[in-house]
Length: 185
Image: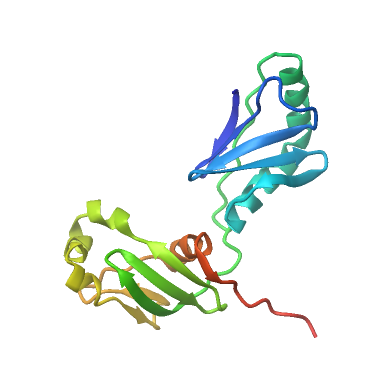
């Protein structure tokens, strides 16, 4: 399985001796998807919307290179590596404040965002963090989480906080309710 590229946790591959429709395979966080190259389309699998958008953006930029790599793997030749999607500091097109928080269990929260999205986040990775995150190891202290409307995210009494855009991405991966979509008119 030749690896063609990797970016933001996404790994792009093509298999030798695969079915004939030109496509790539993408893996991210234990999930996988098959994406048709021409036309660009999701063939199978699922990713969080942000990740799927990044895969499609990258594939659109490199569509001709992907078709050339497809021809190579069909001829049982190794594909050429393709540069990753470049980080763009302006990639986040909109920010959504956290409006409500509910503690589900230690390290698990249900968050509601300003666009109506509701999703569950697992913060168990904080268990390995020190500094301002050390008090969060105590379940009673963790439960003191609150929303600070002045900064648009969750905080704890000791000043620990988490970036709302990262929380949004995690919540979007574990949706309870889709965001509201504004309609023109």
